[in-house]
Length: 316
Figure 1 (tube, rainbow, N blue to C red):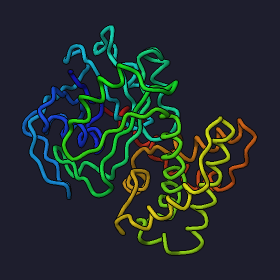
Figure 2 (figure 1 turned 30 degrees about the vertical axis):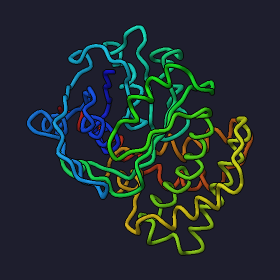
Figure 3 (figure 1 turned 45 degrees about the vertical axis):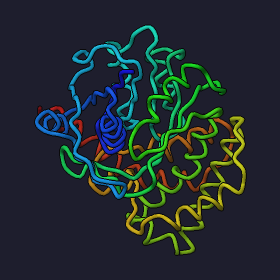
């Protein structure tokens, strides 16, 4: 089975590299300095689960690769529309497209671009980032990838994809009967956690023990529960306690991609996280004051980063 991973950032490079390490047929679709580094040498993975130096096929455009059996789209959410529109050269009659973005709306974007019949929804858990071009660092959280049919249930094509993807080294892959619930379970944690941490500008260890930000995180989770319920997804209240326990076990220096992007002046996934909560809440008539406040605090960072990126693009 031929796998193409679209996006060679911290998530795409980690999972793609571990599949290549296991001997699977993998190509990374990359850009910029990461593309150049991987063209000239192996992908280096630094991880508490074991370091690796992995030769891996890499391309800068989809039309350089040929048809794929599974396309794993691991771009940032704001990059997804452009990435989805570029996938056509990879798509054969039975090609599956699996998005593993943050948030709960990526599958809709992919379905619009490539056809709903191709799309599997997915989510992942990992703290990883590109330390330098050609090197990805896994900083925490056991790497887990969960995917399944958008309509629910287990399909034969899902089983075939799972049989290949689960062979990756130093990762857990799950085939889910209810991937919509899995997406919202992650969103329950990640939307408020990422926004609180980014607004504070500090890693988890600096705020999780303090009552005001901890209470804001909890209130934000209750907002996600309410919005999910408005869309027919029931999130059990005990998930909130489980998420608090999870936060308390995180490495003290643990950060989210949202915090790192705000800190480094890059474009962020704010619109897919706190922004999505505000939009979905308004559409359902569900108040989301915590996410509204956090979104307002973080929006100027996103706008400034977007304008800077557009200015750089105009100069090139």
